[in-house]
Length: 407
Image (cartoon, rainbow, N blue to C red; front, side):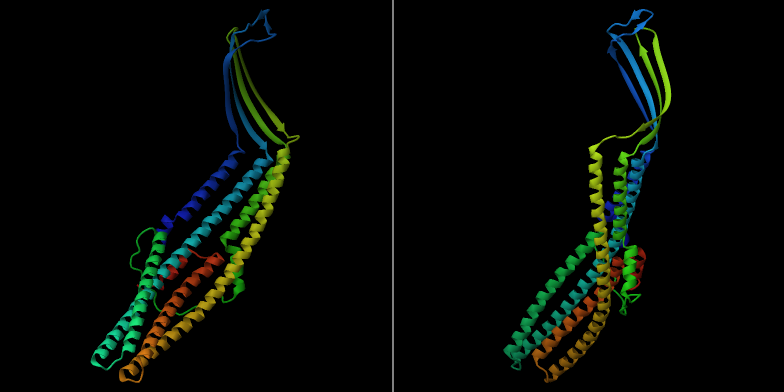
């Protein structure tokens, strides 16, 4: 199922296209350091002033043909070197963005898959509850007809039955929504899903918060992306500062001039070094100020991303720890509710417990089942959420989740 999501997810696909664009950006910046070859040509009419060849003056209306081929190779251009550095950092940042979205896709698949299982479990509980209430309602109505029951019992049973019908409709709607969420991720209809086997709740490994926070700082793709963007902003600042630097280039050219009025065909080939340096350009200083502000803003973004990653990891760690206790207590409460239901049912059959007692324990049993299933699937998803917060959620984890599903 994850492979289907991987092949069709538009968010991840967009990030991959942006990564391809960043790779092209590196190639573009590298090409700017290479040679360039250009051709210029011209043809037209005009006059040559103060030109005398063997006492023959050229008149207005003389036609000319001219072309030149120019080859330029930068030897040193500080701006272009910094631009290449910035492009490489941009590519690193986009690579981290792809990694982050891939991890988020794994998390979304896990959440959606077990969300459907949870909705299915709640639907089963609602159906079971409705069946029990329907059975009791029929019994109370039968007792009333034979004169052994009372109207209050029938009304109480009918009220619970009607409420249970409403709960079933709500559960079915929740299931449809859960399936729609999963279908949106895999872009195909949801087939029958394998449920989980009986599992034992597991605390985080290691069961200490500090190692997980350190993992997040070292591995969280959002932090890597923010660091690369900061490096890119400093490279852009360096690029703007280097606009004051001289540029050294090697140039070679060949030119030809033809004049129709006289047999002149002039060809020239030359090679030379060029050195250029701006003496004054007010835009340079403004670009430097702009890139300095951008670098400071990017630095603050990195700080915020790091703080958020720490908070998300700490929250996910505590949620997983809590989910272990919740699952254990939910299982104990379910066993207790099942025992109470069976005892109350027997007591009702022999006349020692009232109809209200029986209806109450049925509601308690249904709530205990819902709480158990909610705690079960929440615990499983919490495992994925902690790894995603720490930036270490991988495709291998999909295989680990598959291993706890019924074959």
